[in-house]
Length: 334
Ligand SMILES: [Zn+2]
Image (cartoon, rainbow, N blue to C red; front, side):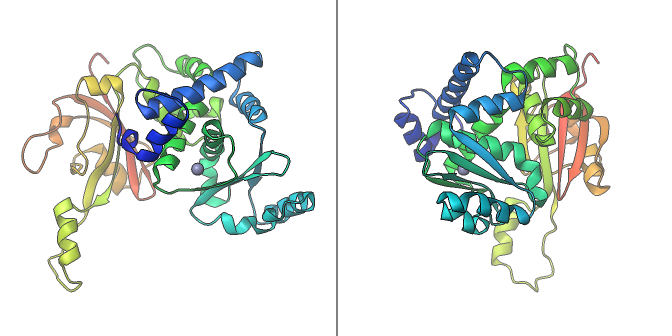
């Protein structure tokens, strides 16, 4: 059970759909089953574009994308004469932190408008499947603005999107042609899978999809400059001119082991320091997009004593903006 399973909105949704068991898993399965049925009835799909077309057709959903400002005028000219004045004000909906919005037309068609301007383009694939997820669990969406909020249902839609968008019967065979039995997952492999599966899916979401399917242990981490929890508390009480302010250090902010990694306790602790000797630290400090190396995780120590497991790992790291992401895979037998 994840934290999301405890959220009342999520529990209520599962109940409304008549589902039992862990709410998140049950809702994801419900969506997956629905799509599987449609795919079967359509005679099968061979690409993610075909899949999306089948699903959109069943949901009476059309996509519109905004790539530049002039697209607002185009959509206004297209939909306002159809008696849908809301399209005149579309731009107001797509604020900086909003990736998509969904509008139900008078004839029942759902129009999902996907914002692909600037940095938002990287989430294009995800935003499309996020909007699909809304309709899978709730047919009568009146108007759905997708903001990158932390609301439980929005996080749930992202989880559904990550699952059903990387459709297993398309993704897994493709993934398996790129990875040899027991072989290591590298950034190059992730990129090759991404290019073949869906070039507009982000590298990170593709990496997650690979991570989940890998039969060997892989720990995914993200680190950024951060204070300790104590320092954060202290800072709130401190005045600006205090000169013994603590310094931010590179710390683990996310650690996601896959199944086999969990089994061998290959994981990291939230907020622990990344040792300066690590390739993860070097990738961050030198702003490298592809740094790799081998190290023993017993050099990843805790301030109160102890360390991560004693294990030689292969690490690959990439700096992205103000963070660094890395994969760690045990070295044994390679
Ligand atoms: Zn949403």
